[in-house]
Length: 530
Ligand code: ADP
Ligand code: MG
Image 1 (tube, rainbow, N blue to C red):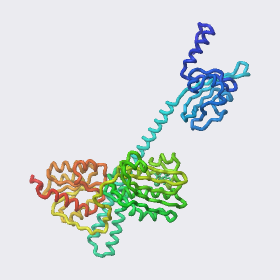
Image 2: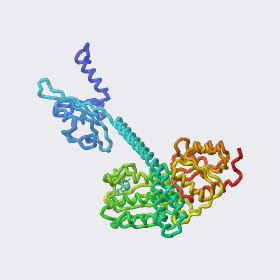
Image 3: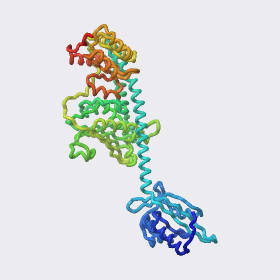
Image 4: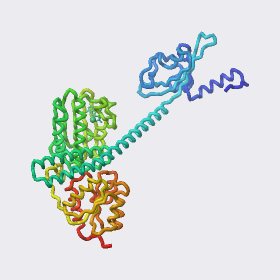
């Protein structure tokens, strides 16, 4: 745009001066050596200096110029000297790092101008303040990152949940058949072998629970626990895990109040924290597991300000420790400082999830070169019962009733296992591979049917709608759902918490559950004759 001039040169200069002084952009004129000649009001504001002081800049500015990554810029890499050296316009983002640690971010454009005879040059610097815009951009990036992270977690959660679903079906068969075998075997040596199969199956089932805890699909099965017993139990496997170079010390407070948590999940917490401690001590050291009580008034010393008191478990090591940057990210999923095949970055994310689910909290205390303490605080509960005990080794007693049960399960092996178990326990059994078949049987029923035992997730009509349609045909039909896919468990639990059997279940659990259902509601609700 060219300005058609109808005023004198002096008037034009005055106008320009007025415009310059009212610009929000800082405008500074430099001589060929990079010294300030003039500056407008915005520049004085941005640099927090009068023109008089700006002219003295090479001596003592109250800020240091830094690059975008925060490094101090040497004089010859600052925008004005660069533009003067190159003899062409130059753009650069810099920060002014003030003595009080604040930083003003600037987009700088420098235009060098040569004199007509080429002998002397000068330059104009235009300074745009972008501190707020930059902060917004960083905040947006951070939000985008956490969204991406959440989406990644969700995808993994789906995957883990799906695998665990199939896995639970298989485990129900393995554990169920093993328990049936146990019933028929007389030889103690053979029963011992079956017992080993059961133990392995139970471990696999605990693993599935961990997978589900991570994907948040598993509802925890909290029990009243003595944390010390859980630790003593977990320590048995810890010794093997941490190796001989690491000394394991226990410092467990007596008379600890009980906590309400899932024992399998707590095992996982102890395991993950101990493995991290081991990894931090490649040349050996001391791993200490300590417990203590804390009341709310003292608690902010040991955990954090929101704590209402509880039981503290501290797992400490004398390892490499962490700097504050690492420490601030350890609970992020996939954050790891380990080699690709050694770390997944999921350990502490899982631990964090579990502790949150148990209404507790966790924090890290760490010092590089000294060691790390992971401090877990769980709410204390009044002791009612010690319930952390091993169940395996008990011989099964499958005594059922004489009622008729309709079993609906799409997995053939599971269907026949249920058949076998119920048959053995004395029940009459009808089988259906899906909801359509089941409804057919219910409509054409020739015998009484007292209970519908149905899978929840099935192709076609699912277990919940099947139950609804079945009760439309037989209003007093009892329902027992079986599922490992806990997505829908909440729906069912909302209906009736007693009408649900978690997969994997053992024959004993199935028969017990049926017994409880029939006993709760003995005879009054026999299905009516149509
Ligand atoms: P992973 O162990 O797979 O790396 P985690 O979530 O368990 O994932 O831990 C994340 C990171 O936290 C580790 O890579 C490590 O940098 C750091 N960390 C965790 N525990 C400790 C510890 N006890 N000492 C030092 N660093 C630790
Ligand atoms: Mg780990």
